[in-house]
Image 1 (cartoon, rainbow, N blue to C red):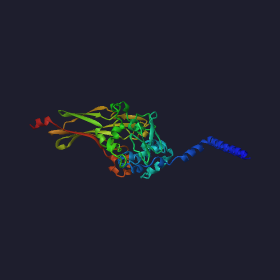
Image 2: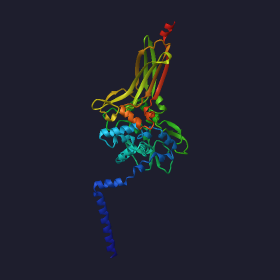
Image 3: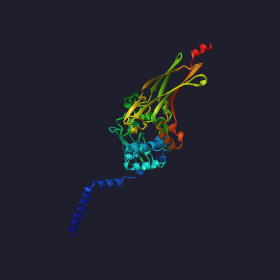
Image 4: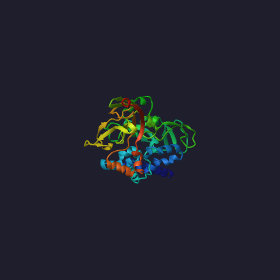
Length: 416
Protein backbone atom coordinates (compact mmCIF):
# COMPACT_ATOMS: atom_id res chain seq x y z
CA UNK A 1 0.00 0.00 0.00
CA UNK A 2 2.82 2.37 0.91
CA UNK A 3 4.62 1.54 -2.36
CA UNK A 4 1.42 2.34 -4.25
CA UNK A 5 1.00 5.70 -2.51
CA UNK A 6 4.67 6.55 -3.12
CA UNK A 7 4.36 5.67 -6.82
CA UNK A 8 1.17 7.72 -7.12
CA UNK A 9 2.77 10.72 -5.44
CA UNK A 10 5.78 10.48 -7.78
CA UNK A 11 3.48 10.32 -10.82
CA UNK A 12 1.42 13.32 -9.72
CA UNK A 13 4.56 15.36 -8.97
CA UNK A 14 6.10 14.51 -12.31
CA UNK A 15 2.87 15.40 -14.15
CA UNK A 16 2.63 18.78 -12.40
CA UNK A 17 6.30 19.63 -13.12
CA UNK A 18 5.87 18.78 -16.79
CA UNK A 19 2.61 20.73 -16.91
CA UNK A 20 4.21 23.83 -15.38
CA UNK A 21 7.21 23.61 -17.75
CA UNK A 22 4.87 23.18 -20.72
CA UNK A 23 2.77 26.19 -19.71
CA UNK A 24 5.94 28.26 -19.30
CA UNK A 25 7.25 27.25 -22.72
CA UNK A 26 3.92 27.58 -24.51
CA UNK A 27 2.89 30.81 -22.78
CA UNK A 28 2.06 33.57 -25.26
CA UNK A 29 4.96 35.95 -25.97
CA UNK A 30 2.95 38.90 -24.64
CA UNK A 31 2.51 37.17 -21.29
CA UNK A 32 6.22 36.38 -21.10
CA UNK A 33 7.14 39.98 -21.98
CA UNK A 34 4.66 41.23 -19.41
CA UNK A 35 6.20 38.97 -16.78
CA UNK A 36 9.70 40.24 -17.64
CA UNK A 37 8.45 43.82 -17.48
CA UNK A 38 6.88 43.28 -14.09
CA UNK A 39 10.12 41.69 -12.86
CA UNK A 40 12.21 44.62 -14.11
CA UNK A 41 13.37 46.88 -11.30
CA UNK A 42 12.07 50.48 -11.28
CA UNK A 43 14.20 52.86 -13.36
CA UNK A 44 15.08 54.94 -10.30
CA UNK A 45 16.50 51.78 -8.71
CA UNK A 46 18.37 50.67 -11.83
CA UNK A 47 19.76 54.18 -12.40
CA UNK A 48 20.14 55.73 -8.93
CA UNK A 49 20.18 59.52 -8.74
CA UNK A 50 23.59 61.15 -8.44
CA UNK A 51 22.55 62.56 -5.06
CA UNK A 52 22.97 59.03 -3.69
CA UNK A 53 26.53 58.88 -5.01
CA UNK A 54 27.24 62.23 -3.35
CA UNK A 55 27.15 60.58 0.07
CA UNK A 56 30.50 58.93 -0.60
CA UNK A 57 31.85 60.87 -3.59
CA UNK A 58 31.37 64.52 -2.65
CA UNK A 59 34.27 65.91 -4.70
CA UNK A 60 33.21 64.08 -7.85
CA UNK A 61 29.58 65.11 -7.33
CA UNK A 62 30.45 68.80 -6.98
CA UNK A 63 32.54 68.71 -10.16
CA UNK A 64 29.76 66.95 -12.07
CA UNK A 65 27.15 69.35 -10.70
CA UNK A 66 29.06 72.27 -12.26
CA UNK A 67 29.32 70.52 -15.64
CA UNK A 68 27.18 70.75 -18.76
CA UNK A 69 26.36 67.03 -18.35
CA UNK A 70 24.44 67.71 -15.15
CA UNK A 71 22.20 70.09 -17.13
CA UNK A 72 21.63 67.78 -20.08
CA UNK A 73 17.84 68.00 -19.66
CA UNK A 74 17.78 71.24 -17.67
CA UNK A 75 19.21 73.82 -20.05
CA UNK A 76 16.79 76.22 -21.66
CA UNK A 77 18.12 75.65 -25.23
CA UNK A 78 17.57 71.90 -24.85
CA UNK A 79 14.04 72.23 -23.49
CA UNK A 80 12.97 74.61 -26.26
CA UNK A 81 14.65 72.47 -28.94
CA UNK A 82 13.04 69.30 -27.59
CA UNK A 83 9.58 70.82 -27.94
CA UNK A 84 10.31 71.92 -31.52
CA UNK A 85 11.68 68.49 -32.40
CA UNK A 86 8.70 66.64 -30.93
CA UNK A 87 6.19 68.86 -32.73
CA UNK A 88 7.92 68.76 -36.12
CA UNK A 89 9.43 65.30 -36.43
CA UNK A 90 6.58 62.96 -35.59
CA UNK A 91 8.67 61.54 -32.75
CA UNK A 92 6.38 62.77 -29.97
CA UNK A 93 8.40 60.95 -27.32
CA UNK A 94 11.66 62.64 -28.30
CA UNK A 95 13.59 59.36 -28.35
CA UNK A 96 16.32 60.73 -30.59
CA UNK A 97 17.10 63.50 -28.09
CA UNK A 98 16.94 61.31 -25.01
CA UNK A 99 19.30 58.80 -26.64
CA UNK A 100 22.14 61.00 -25.38
CA UNK A 101 20.54 63.57 -23.07
CA UNK A 102 18.95 60.87 -20.89
CA UNK A 103 20.40 57.50 -21.99
CA UNK A 104 18.44 55.62 -19.32
CA UNK A 105 15.68 55.42 -21.94
CA UNK A 106 17.80 52.94 -23.88
CA UNK A 107 16.95 50.44 -21.15
CA UNK A 108 13.58 51.97 -20.24
CA UNK A 109 12.07 53.26 -23.52
CA UNK A 110 8.64 53.36 -21.89
CA UNK A 111 9.90 56.15 -19.60
CA UNK A 112 10.32 58.83 -22.25
CA UNK A 113 6.96 60.31 -21.25
CA UNK A 114 8.15 60.41 -17.65
CA UNK A 115 11.16 62.45 -18.72
CA UNK A 116 8.99 64.78 -20.78
CA UNK A 117 6.73 65.49 -17.79
CA UNK A 118 9.77 66.04 -15.58
CA UNK A 119 11.23 68.52 -18.08
CA UNK A 120 7.92 70.33 -18.50
CA UNK A 121 7.77 70.77 -14.73
CA UNK A 122 10.84 72.99 -14.95
CA UNK A 123 12.47 71.18 -12.02
CA UNK A 124 13.30 67.59 -13.05
CA UNK A 125 13.94 65.13 -10.25
CA UNK A 126 15.61 62.66 -12.61
CA UNK A 127 19.17 62.74 -13.88
CA UNK A 128 19.73 63.14 -17.58
CA UNK A 129 23.43 62.31 -17.67
CA UNK A 130 24.53 61.44 -14.16
CA UNK A 131 26.80 59.00 -12.39
CA UNK A 132 24.82 55.86 -13.14
CA UNK A 133 24.14 56.75 -16.78
CA UNK A 134 27.90 56.67 -17.34
CA UNK A 135 29.31 54.20 -14.82
CA UNK A 136 26.89 51.34 -15.49
CA UNK A 137 28.09 50.97 -19.09
CA UNK A 138 29.86 47.63 -19.39
CA UNK A 139 30.68 47.72 -23.09
CA UNK A 140 30.17 49.66 -26.32
CA UNK A 141 29.19 48.25 -29.71
CA UNK A 142 31.29 50.18 -32.26
CA UNK A 143 29.53 48.55 -35.20
CA UNK A 144 26.42 50.65 -34.61
CA UNK A 145 26.31 54.34 -35.47
CA UNK A 146 26.29 56.05 -33.14
CA UNK A 147 28.02 53.33 -31.09
CA UNK A 148 25.59 51.67 -28.71
CA UNK A 149 26.34 51.39 -24.96
CA UNK A 150 25.59 48.07 -23.24
CA UNK A 151 24.38 48.59 -19.66
CA UNK A 152 24.67 46.16 -16.76
CA UNK A 153 22.05 47.21 -14.25
CA UNK A 154 23.27 45.51 -11.13
CA UNK A 155 25.40 46.53 -8.16
CA UNK A 156 28.53 46.70 -10.31
CA UNK A 157 30.02 50.09 -11.10
CA UNK A 158 32.61 50.33 -13.87
CA UNK A 159 35.50 52.76 -14.13
CA UNK A 160 39.14 53.20 -15.09
CA UNK A 161 40.80 52.91 -11.66
CA UNK A 162 42.66 49.60 -11.53
CA UNK A 163 42.77 49.21 -7.75
CA UNK A 164 39.26 49.98 -6.47
CA UNK A 165 38.64 49.80 -2.75
CA UNK A 166 36.12 47.23 -1.57
CA UNK A 167 33.00 48.79 -0.09
CA UNK A 168 29.46 47.93 0.95
CA UNK A 169 27.74 50.28 -1.51
CA UNK A 170 28.65 48.57 -4.77
CA UNK A 171 31.16 46.36 -6.50
CA UNK A 172 33.80 48.28 -8.47
CA UNK A 173 35.21 46.74 -11.64
CA UNK A 174 38.02 48.35 -13.65
CA UNK A 175 37.82 48.27 -17.45
CA UNK A 176 40.01 49.78 -20.17
CA UNK A 177 36.90 51.08 -21.92
CA UNK A 178 36.75 54.06 -19.55
CA UNK A 179 40.18 55.22 -20.72
CA UNK A 180 39.34 54.97 -24.41
CA UNK A 181 37.87 57.51 -26.81
CA UNK A 182 35.44 54.86 -28.03
CA UNK A 183 33.58 55.24 -24.73
CA UNK A 184 32.89 58.93 -25.39
CA UNK A 185 31.78 58.69 -29.02
CA UNK A 186 28.59 56.86 -28.00
CA UNK A 187 27.07 60.34 -27.73
CA UNK A 188 29.51 62.51 -29.68
CA UNK A 189 29.81 60.76 -33.06
CA UNK A 190 26.68 61.85 -34.88
CA UNK A 191 23.02 62.71 -34.51
CA UNK A 192 20.97 59.49 -34.21
CA UNK A 193 18.91 58.97 -37.36
CA UNK A 194 20.96 61.50 -39.32
CA UNK A 195 23.91 59.29 -40.21
CA UNK A 196 23.87 60.56 -43.83
CA UNK A 197 25.07 63.93 -42.60
CA UNK A 198 28.81 64.37 -41.90
CA UNK A 199 29.72 63.14 -38.44
CA UNK A 200 30.34 65.59 -35.62
CA UNK A 201 33.95 64.79 -34.74
CA UNK A 202 35.69 64.52 -38.09
CA UNK A 203 38.46 61.92 -38.71
CA UNK A 204 39.63 61.89 -35.09
CA UNK A 205 41.06 58.37 -35.31
CA UNK A 206 43.65 59.50 -37.87
CA UNK A 207 45.01 62.41 -35.83
CA UNK A 208 48.50 62.65 -34.37
CA UNK A 209 46.96 63.08 -30.95
CA UNK A 210 44.98 59.85 -31.09
CA UNK A 211 47.83 57.86 -32.61
CA UNK A 212 50.07 59.08 -29.79
CA UNK A 213 47.65 57.45 -27.34
CA UNK A 214 46.08 60.65 -26.07
CA UNK A 215 42.35 59.94 -25.76
CA UNK A 216 39.33 62.18 -25.12
CA UNK A 217 39.70 61.76 -21.38
CA UNK A 218 43.21 63.28 -21.40
CA UNK A 219 41.74 66.73 -22.09
CA UNK A 220 38.12 66.47 -21.02
CA UNK A 221 38.73 64.51 -17.81
CA UNK A 222 42.20 65.79 -16.90
CA UNK A 223 44.18 63.90 -14.30
CA UNK A 224 44.48 65.32 -10.79
CA UNK A 225 45.53 64.13 -7.33
CA UNK A 226 43.03 63.77 -4.51
CA UNK A 227 40.43 61.48 -2.97
CA UNK A 228 37.76 59.79 -5.03
CA UNK A 229 35.61 58.63 -2.12
CA UNK A 230 35.26 60.59 1.11
CA UNK A 231 38.12 59.75 3.48
CA UNK A 232 39.96 57.65 0.91
CA UNK A 233 43.72 58.12 0.58
CA UNK A 234 44.78 60.57 -2.11
CA UNK A 235 45.59 59.10 -5.50
CA UNK A 236 45.40 59.90 -9.20
CA UNK A 237 41.84 60.82 -10.09
CA UNK A 238 39.93 62.15 -13.09
CA UNK A 239 38.22 65.51 -13.16
CA UNK A 240 34.43 65.20 -13.60
CA UNK A 241 33.61 68.77 -14.63
CA UNK A 242 34.34 67.73 -18.25
CA UNK A 243 36.02 70.96 -19.36
CA UNK A 244 35.57 71.91 -22.99
CA UNK A 245 33.83 75.06 -24.08
CA UNK A 246 33.74 75.91 -20.38
CA UNK A 247 36.96 75.31 -18.47
CA UNK A 248 40.65 76.12 -18.83
CA UNK A 249 41.20 73.45 -21.48
CA UNK A 250 39.77 75.76 -24.15
CA UNK A 251 42.89 77.95 -23.90
CA UNK A 252 44.85 74.99 -25.28
CA UNK A 253 42.50 74.50 -28.22
CA UNK A 254 44.34 76.72 -30.73
CA UNK A 255 47.52 78.61 -31.40
CA UNK A 256 47.29 81.92 -33.23
CA UNK A 257 50.07 83.69 -35.12
CA UNK A 258 49.38 87.27 -36.25
CA UNK A 259 51.41 89.19 -38.83
CA UNK A 260 50.68 92.81 -39.80
CA UNK A 261 51.87 94.64 -42.92
CA UNK A 262 51.25 98.37 -43.42
CA UNK A 263 51.11 99.15 -47.16
CA UNK A 264 50.39 102.84 -47.39
CA UNK A 265 46.68 103.54 -47.33
CA UNK A 266 45.93 99.82 -46.96
CA UNK A 267 47.04 97.44 -44.25
CA UNK A 268 46.93 93.67 -44.08
CA UNK A 269 46.68 91.33 -41.14
CA UNK A 270 47.36 87.64 -41.63
CA UNK A 271 46.10 85.31 -38.92
CA UNK A 272 47.36 81.73 -38.89
CA UNK A 273 45.08 79.56 -36.79
CA UNK A 274 46.44 76.18 -35.74
CA UNK A 275 43.88 73.83 -34.22
CA UNK A 276 45.41 71.69 -31.49
CA UNK A 277 42.41 69.46 -30.93
CA UNK A 278 41.84 66.06 -32.58
CA UNK A 279 38.25 66.80 -33.55
CA UNK A 280 36.24 69.41 -35.42
CA UNK A 281 36.24 72.85 -33.83
CA UNK A 282 33.57 73.57 -32.94
CA UNK A 283 31.60 70.34 -32.76
CA UNK A 284 28.63 71.21 -35.00
CA UNK A 285 25.96 70.11 -32.53
CA UNK A 286 23.81 71.84 -31.57
CA UNK A 287 23.39 73.50 -34.94
CA UNK A 288 24.02 76.99 -33.61
CA UNK A 289 27.55 76.11 -32.45
CA UNK A 290 30.17 78.33 -34.05
CA UNK A 291 33.56 79.84 -33.28
CA UNK A 292 34.02 83.52 -33.98
CA UNK A 293 37.31 85.02 -35.22
CA UNK A 294 37.25 88.77 -34.62
CA UNK A 295 39.69 91.38 -35.89
CA UNK A 296 39.45 94.83 -34.31
CA UNK A 297 41.69 97.76 -35.27
CA UNK A 298 41.99 100.65 -32.83
CA UNK A 299 43.29 103.95 -34.19
CA UNK A 300 43.69 107.43 -32.77
CA UNK A 301 42.66 107.72 -29.09
CA UNK A 302 41.96 103.96 -29.16
CA UNK A 303 38.83 104.49 -31.22
CA UNK A 304 37.66 101.58 -33.32
CA UNK A 305 38.84 102.16 -36.89
CA UNK A 306 37.90 98.78 -38.37
CA UNK A 307 36.25 95.51 -37.41
CA UNK A 308 35.50 92.19 -39.11
CA UNK A 309 34.13 88.88 -37.88
CA UNK A 310 34.45 85.46 -39.47
CA UNK A 311 32.80 82.25 -38.31
CA UNK A 312 33.81 78.62 -38.26
CA UNK A 313 30.57 76.67 -38.43
CA UNK A 314 28.48 74.06 -40.17
CA UNK A 315 25.30 75.46 -41.69
CA UNK A 316 22.52 72.91 -42.17
CA UNK A 317 19.84 72.94 -44.83
CA UNK A 318 16.23 71.69 -44.77
CA UNK A 319 14.57 69.76 -47.57
CA UNK A 320 13.40 73.14 -48.91
CA UNK A 321 16.99 74.33 -49.12
CA UNK A 322 16.62 76.85 -46.30
CA UNK A 323 19.29 77.20 -43.65
CA UNK A 324 18.45 76.06 -40.13
CA UNK A 325 20.18 75.94 -36.75
CA UNK A 326 18.13 72.84 -35.91
CA UNK A 327 20.25 69.98 -37.18
CA UNK A 328 17.40 67.54 -36.57
CA UNK A 329 15.57 69.30 -39.44
CA UNK A 330 18.56 69.00 -41.77
CA UNK A 331 18.85 66.81 -44.85
CA UNK A 332 22.06 68.37 -46.15
CA UNK A 333 24.90 70.74 -45.33
CA UNK A 334 24.92 74.15 -47.00
CA UNK A 335 28.28 75.30 -45.64
CA UNK A 336 30.97 73.59 -43.62
CA UNK A 337 34.09 75.52 -42.65
CA UNK A 338 34.64 74.18 -39.13
CA UNK A 339 38.28 73.74 -38.28
CA UNK A 340 39.07 70.12 -39.08
CA UNK A 341 41.08 68.03 -36.59
CA UNK A 342 44.54 69.59 -36.11
CA UNK A 343 44.01 71.79 -39.19
CA UNK A 344 45.98 74.95 -39.90
CA UNK A 345 43.94 77.77 -41.44
CA UNK A 346 45.25 81.10 -42.77
CA UNK A 347 42.94 84.13 -42.74
CA UNK A 348 43.86 87.41 -44.44
CA UNK A 349 42.19 90.72 -43.58
CA UNK A 350 42.65 93.89 -45.67
CA UNK A 351 41.47 97.26 -44.36
CA UNK A 352 42.15 101.03 -44.61
CA UNK A 353 45.14 102.15 -42.56
CA UNK A 354 43.93 104.45 -39.75
CA UNK A 355 44.59 108.12 -40.56
CA UNK A 356 46.18 110.74 -38.31
CA UNK A 357 47.27 108.10 -35.81
CA UNK A 358 50.83 107.44 -34.57
CA UNK A 359 50.05 103.76 -34.21
CA UNK A 360 47.26 101.24 -34.32
CA UNK A 361 46.31 98.37 -32.05
CA UNK A 362 45.67 95.04 -33.74
CA UNK A 363 43.37 92.89 -31.61
CA UNK A 364 42.53 89.32 -32.62
CA UNK A 365 40.07 87.33 -30.53
CA UNK A 366 38.64 83.84 -30.91
CA UNK A 367 35.52 82.96 -28.96
CA UNK A 368 32.77 80.40 -28.78
CA UNK A 369 29.89 82.50 -30.06
CA UNK A 370 26.59 82.85 -28.15
CA UNK A 371 23.44 81.06 -29.21
CA UNK A 372 21.70 82.41 -32.30
CA UNK A 373 18.79 81.44 -34.53
CA UNK A 374 15.24 82.54 -35.36
CA UNK A 375 14.11 85.46 -33.18
CA UNK A 376 11.20 83.50 -31.72
CA UNK A 377 13.51 80.65 -30.73
CA UNK A 378 16.12 82.89 -29.09
CA UNK A 379 13.43 84.84 -27.27
CA UNK A 380 11.84 81.66 -25.91
CA UNK A 381 15.23 80.39 -24.75
CA UNK A 382 15.70 83.67 -22.89
CA UNK A 383 12.25 83.44 -21.30
CA UNK A 384 12.79 79.84 -20.19
CA UNK A 385 16.24 80.51 -18.73
CA UNK A 386 16.21 81.32 -15.01
CA UNK A 387 18.84 84.02 -15.58
CA UNK A 388 17.35 85.31 -18.82
CA UNK A 389 19.96 86.96 -21.05
CA UNK A 390 22.55 86.30 -18.33
CA UNK A 391 22.29 82.57 -18.99
CA UNK A 392 25.57 81.02 -20.16
CA UNK A 393 24.00 80.26 -23.56
CA UNK A 394 24.03 83.99 -24.34
CA UNK A 395 27.62 84.59 -23.25
CA UNK A 396 30.60 84.48 -25.63
CA UNK A 397 33.40 82.35 -24.23
CA UNK A 398 36.90 83.52 -25.06
CA UNK A 399 39.36 80.96 -26.39
CA UNK A 400 42.35 83.18 -27.09
CA UNK A 401 43.18 86.88 -27.42
CA UNK A 402 46.12 88.59 -29.15
CA UNK A 403 46.96 92.31 -29.03
CA UNK A 404 49.81 94.18 -30.69
CA UNK A 405 50.66 97.85 -31.22
CA UNK A 406 51.91 98.76 -34.70
CA UNK A 407 53.72 102.05 -35.39
CA UNK A 408 52.57 103.91 -38.50
CA UNK A 409 55.55 105.36 -40.38
CA UNK A 410 53.41 107.61 -42.56
CA UNK A 411 52.25 109.45 -39.44
CA UNK A 412 55.88 110.14 -38.47
CA UNK A 413 56.61 111.53 -41.91
CA UNK A 414 53.53 113.77 -41.80
CA UNK A 415 54.30 114.94 -38.28
CA UNK A 416 57.92 115.66 -39.20
